[in-house]
Image (cartoon, rainbow over all chains, first blue to last red; front, side, top):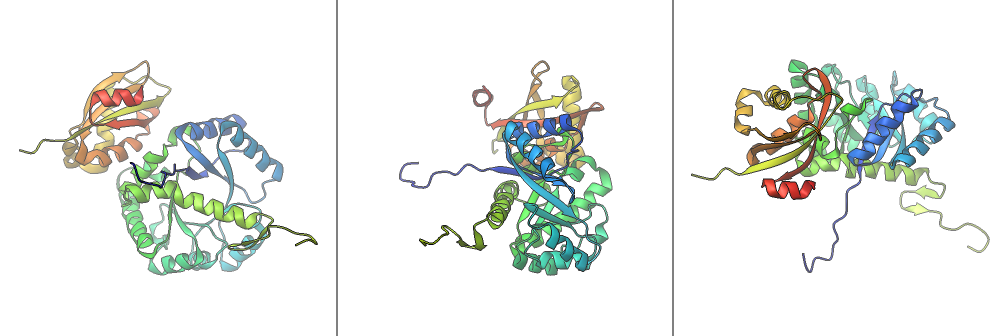
Amino acid sequence: MQGCGVAAVKRIFADLHLHLNAKNSDGTVRVLSKAAELGYGLVGVSLAAETRDEEVERLRSVCSEVGVDFVSRVDLRPRNPDNLMRQLRRLRRKFEIICVACESKAVARQAAKDRRVDLLSFPLLDFRRRFFDRAEAELARGGLAALEVDVKPLLVLEGPARVRLLSFLRREAAVAKGFGVPVVVSSGVSQKLLLRKPREMAALGFLFGLDEVSGLDAVSRSPVALVERNREKLSPGFVAPGIRVVKEGRDC
Amino acid sequence: MKRVKRRYLALQLDSEALPSGKEFIDAVWGAVTKLYGEHGASLTSLALIDYDLDKKNAVLRTNLSTLNMVRASLATITSISDNEAAVHLKAISGTIKALHQKTR
């Protein structure tokens, strides 16, 4: 296209939710290599809150060997809002992504309005505890949290369970779109044969109402923006959004 | 009568097993039928054009109007004749010639 001054920007695809068994290093390498082969540039590995720094560094080096960018992630399952606040105070500066599994309405509301929370996830099969409604979306919009949808249940479930899940996901995706809450589509898998290409993940998003662009954004733009924002916040020079220390010393 | 537009899909099978062409297309039909029912599946006009067991490559044909349905269904395939498997989409094209150029 002549005269078009804007170059097409290549998407970086991200899967922010891989379950890896840290003790099985062969399995870890296999899954991470497969993710790289399928076209992911960024992978988030769900880690326990007590994971040692050496373990994180080992995973980071494995990821750099296979050619993907590693993102540390923790999944919190707080019993109540106070417990959530305590865990956030303890872990926010340790992990790049914090996901809260919302198992009660009080926790869901607190997680949605807390700016330290990146992802909100809801029980996959207990549909009465999927609290992503209009009120939750309104809070999430102010709090910068995104709604995470794992595709694993869409692959392993069949029949009425999958029908109900799709119906709930379609409703939640519509609410999220209406309130401008980003949707992040992740795999949530631990086996390499359950990994799908980013465009296949976007195609699965079509099942619950994401159009082509929204589906691709859910596996690229939204998760990458989350990671970039958090990396900036965790960097030493960060002061506040848009303000960072560029130089220190007497000659400033 | 309006001409039906078709799309050809180049697929890569990821599995330890070596399913036959019939087992492969049965798995695809099964996935489409499970997700969209028999009426939905009948709209896709699916056909297996080519299947290379050695390279584990396949070429499928479908209607353009049901392309998204077929893509989503292919992504939900987790087994073929009781063996764990995944089907990855390599390329889509309007003609077989262009498809071969894309996958070369």
